[in-house]
Amino acid sequence: MSDLRQVLQHRLFPLFLLPIVIGGVGLAINYADGFLGFRNYVQGRTIPDVLVKSGRTGKQLRLIEYRSLADFELEGFDRDLAPKDMPSSKNLKAIALQTGLPTLSIVIDPDDLLNRNTGLIANYSKRGRSWERPAYASYFENGELRFATGAGLRIHGGKTRAALLKSFRLYFRELYGSSQIPSGVLFEGEGDPIRSIVVHNDVRNKRSDKASAEWHFMNPLAYDLAREIGCITPSTQPVQFYLNGVYQGPYVLTEHISADYLKAHFGHDDFVFARMKRDRLKGSPLVERGNRQLFDDFQNWLNTMSAPLKMSEVEEKIDLINMTNWMISILYAGVTDPYQGAALLDETDPNARWFWVNWDMDHAFMDFYDQVALPWEIDNFNGRSGVLKKKKPRAIIFDRLRRESPEYRIFFLTRITEVLNHILTPEKVGQKVARYEDIAISYGISDRAFLEAIKEYVKERPAVLRRQQNTYFDAGDSYRLSIRSRTPIDIRVDGYEVGDEYVGWYFADTPARITIPESDRQLSGAWVVNGDEILMSEPNIELNLSSDTHVEIMPSFPLKH
Image (cartoon, rainbow, N blue to C red):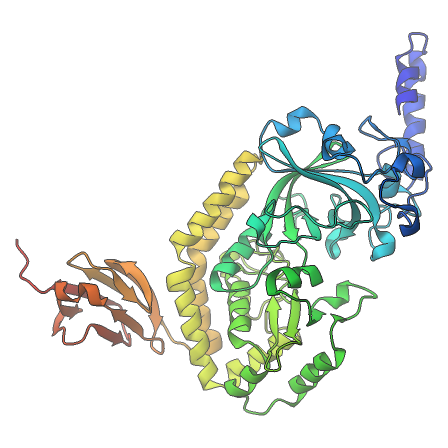
């Protein structure tokens, strides 16, 4: 590239030849796999373990030697460089750090990305350790370098591997430098030690309109809401992402669900670990670790469950609240690619039950397949990719319980009522959305129409979900309950503190439980339910609603007018 630039800038270069040169260059680029960029014919490769030893520098190894597309050179891979001297640290332009935003810089031999036979991007569908390449990675916050190390780089994802902007996975190994990210640097230390991480391109467009406005941060927002419900999710961190000095846009660092994740969050990795989207991971085993027979036994049980299916039988095999929370998180967010994540069984616990980790919720909020006129109206029970459509373990269990178990019907209706009334309230969800709006502004995302769409979605979605419960759980109508205390006390509704005012929605089969805390009982004297006064002989009442209902809590002393 630099040689061509020198020729073009030479004062004797005949300008009339410029179009011919440019055209020839274009043909050469198209011939060379269609990637925009010149590349040296240096074979990309992983570094053999036997060649990398403590104290031996990459200058001795001479495995990477080139001038990059970003006009800086690497003279070799040196895992012993000081963090500030690593190419990913010192070749990042100062302007990239002036924002103070979290920033990830990765530097890799362009040939290891683009080579026809060995490059990661040129062979984006390839997987496994043989498709890992050495790279440098540096992470900054507030303009300050927090860590830098050599790392192994791979392409990450399923269908998104074919996207123009790739997602990547970083592996931290002693082979390259550090075996983990320093403690406390990412995710407030919750995932420590972090030995691998996903660098996720979180931008999506609707499938029906690839030229439509870009949507950002659906995964982290959906994870945040799922975590509020009680789901197990990876932690995330938005970043500015630079690859070989070139800005790729806002990306999201995400915990990689792996054996290291299990150790960090559960203290050990002795789990049966089954990935739920094996159809997209060609050649990968369904059960990645642990006793395969235990998973086969689970699958066999699915085919032999009693009829009618009882909750008690299911609860012996799976963590039913975990599965139900996962189901509600998918239904609420309208995720149209739901059956992903990992199924796990703790082999150290003789009474262990199967549970799931949420993963890949990037179709959330947007009605990816344009099934309905308004995205919040999506029927995610039975739509194109609805939770009842596929013959997956969670779908089979949920659908049979829904149809066959009166006990689970009440259990599910009670739980989704609790989530909508107390956990994913418009106010609480609005605060989450506002956080990502602030992030979008700080990262320079000028087209924020997707945020306005999400705001409208979370405002309207609860009422739609309540209506859908009648279709799939025979719930009937839901009714509005409003409560007001005429004296300043902290009311509890369904076990949640709500202050002195409250509004929620209930089905006939999901009663509301209202409690006056013991410390405030001397201030309250009567319940007034739809105008009918009831002397407060008990500090608790349970209401089965058959119409919209208003409750006033009257003081124990006369009000002054």
